[in-house]
Length: 379
Image 1: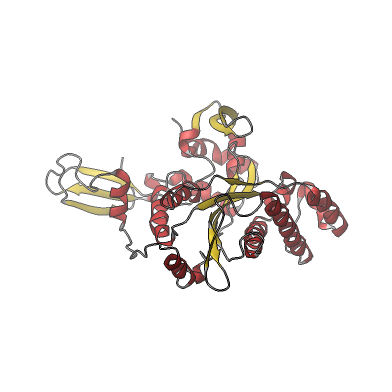
Image 2: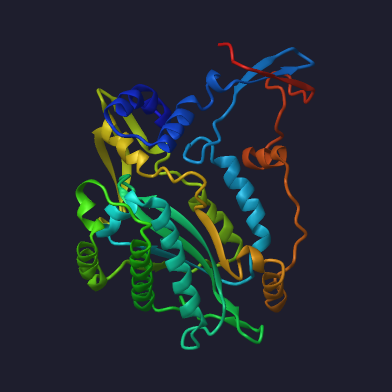
């Protein structure tokens, strides 16, 4: 089965010659094409008992690479287990209408920050309202920018604990169903996002090129936003998790996911790429789509994040500045065991993943292995 790397090696150079590609996107393409090849060097493992040698190529470790996320994901999951509360959790998804996509795509860093801020303020203000919860809650937010068909679809996944701390530092549990009405959340989120977007325009933080260049004029920009204020924005809440233990494992499916995994790519030939995708508008049916390799790369590059952008963020009682005091207090109030933090080594994480002892000779099963680095990997 072909992989993203195979597609890029075959077609990325032509794509870059014929299209405008940013420095960050070129870096990503280069990393993915070199991942686990002799270009990045590697190391040789030699068994001291039987002399068996095995060459391993270095990985690119790029966060957009589908082959480099497993260990990062496991490290993240292992770290987050210490922040779990013994309560139910809700999965809330907030998205923006497609009308705004051209503006967001041309101003990614600014607009993604606005998206996070709008989501955070919406959940914080509504949770503090006594009509709903009357307490400070928290959430972990993960930015995704794609739909199943690889088209541009920015949205944030939020994992929200079922409760929070009130001003008297008492734990207030939420209802079994999500404690905030989805329509109220949607309209509050809409107002927050558009207000922050307007402010970014007034501050001169937005740029407009090509087909939306006319939006650089105030009257045109405000006219563009007017009908968006009247739209119903999509916010939905999935059923709550039954146990806190399943939350982090579930989260791991979202945190280190890339736009498309290799196992969804079915074929690549004659300049076309065929992949499977789930159509959520048609009863979640799996379907097959064939597009040109050029279009596949174009769609893939839509989801390259700005350099250094934090796509996973924690807020409220789960925020970094609250973990030492408020989160610890929450654990005490709801009888969540405070577990001593034990950081697993890379070897321990690998053994956990593969379910057996790591770094054994495949021929004689000896653990007496020598490793040395090489600048290039001979074939």
